[in-house]
Amino acid sequence: MSTPSAAPSAGPTSRVFPRLGPELFDALRHARPRRIVLQVPAGLVPGAHDLAARLRAETGARVVVAARPCFGACDFPSPGEAPNADAAVVLGHAPIPNVPLPRSTYFVEMRESGGDPGALAATVDRAGLPHRLGVVASVQHLDLVSPLSEALTRTGRLVRVGTGDRRLAYPGQALGCNYTGAEAIAPDVDAFLFVGTGRFHPIGLAYAVDRPVWSLDPLRNVLEPPIDRARLVARRQLTVAQARDARRWGILVSTFAGQNRTPTALALQERARAHGREAEILLFDRLDPHDLEGRGLDAYVNTACPRIALDDGELYPRPILTPPEFLMALGESPLEPYRFDTYH
Ligand code: SF4
Image 1 (cartoon, rainbow, N blue to C red):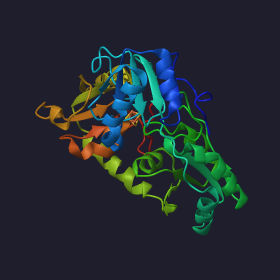
Image 2 (image 1 turned 135 degrees about the vertical axis):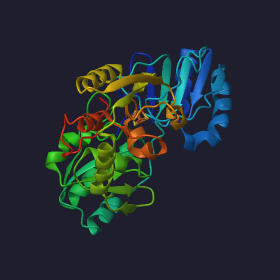
Image 3 (image 1 turned 90 degrees about the horizontal axis):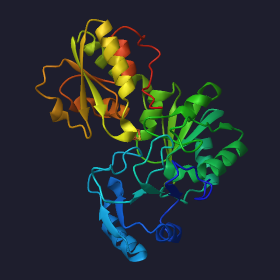
Image 4 (image 1 turned 45 degrees about the horizontal axis):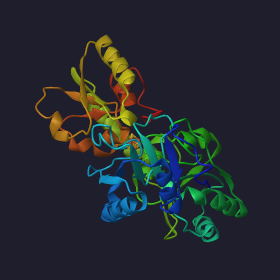
């Protein structure tokens, strides 16, 4: 779908590459950084040190590997983690266009070239998916969106691919905190087809759009039926109900550039006080459930990554809500329709 030269930029100091290769090494040699920090997501850790050695050999720069697990596209190495690095190589993520970068950053999206559009469309057709389909993909499989959409159209389907807001780099892209591309086309489709692996995005998409979300693993050509959105939402509504009478709230604010919503936190603090509740702001970079133990607070609202509350909420000692859920708990918003905490 996109090439390095056509790909969007997250700022004047970012470059985007579909995969590891000579173009990346040429660009780094040209830029001549003195020290590079390399960041890889958990699944690519086994190859990180070989890649560091290769970067060292290809560029002559000093290379350090960021050991901290990387949560997502918003979570590139901070200035504090790699204070002397003048360039970062980030694997497995697209840039988030509206998040400022601390240093020159080379995003290597690790695009997959596999997947037979005709065979995948035939699988979808055999399963009898609805006529009007929205297609969404993880960054790794975005190159399949156009050919798969064409193949699905040949099966008689009406296919839509949405363009999201400025937190998304590409049309059709899934980001765990932002499905605005899908939301834009939801009124025009009967179901969504997520192209990628794992349950993280199908679950996020199911929270964001009130449509069945089918998942298609493009390399194995395996189609998974929709997850139960009603059950997901009911579980969150129960958490909201448990927090409704909380008097003392903690408002969680991340210091990561890509997860910092201080203005939202301050606005929520005002809303809490307007309802006669106490609300204290708590700062963190990496949130550990143990950090919230023994505080004497009744419940929390998390303004950082929305998936902390939605996916990991049961790890925390008290109810932990997203900002829209917090407004539901205060009685300012209705429980239905459920609102996903889109990070814009
Ligand atoms: S805020 Fe969460 S979902 Fe969004 S990019 Fe960051 S880690 Fe991923």
